[in-house]
Image (tube, rainbow, N blue to C red; front, side):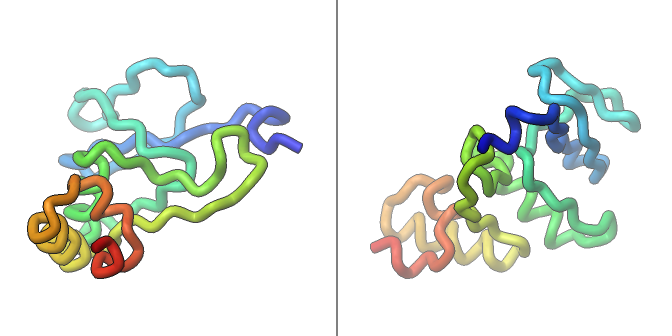
Length: 120
């Protein structure tokens, strides 16, 4: 049975400079940040915002969203769950970028890898 087809679900939108996240209905519209009025970035269904003072966590969020990845764990319709890995600290981002540069891989592929040394 389709999880997202039964009930209207809200998705996460993020403003990285302000370190704010909000949930809005899935409507495809542009949602401005409540603090700076800049457009918020769509982060996906399964985004969990780090605490506002967590510099390392927000740097990882900026890298993931900047690479074009989203925080999704469900299939599009919500039937199956296949958790995706996303780095949670600045050190994990740095490690994956270093491996991607060495192997010549796209940054998005390296950031999505659970273990960056298995990419080779």
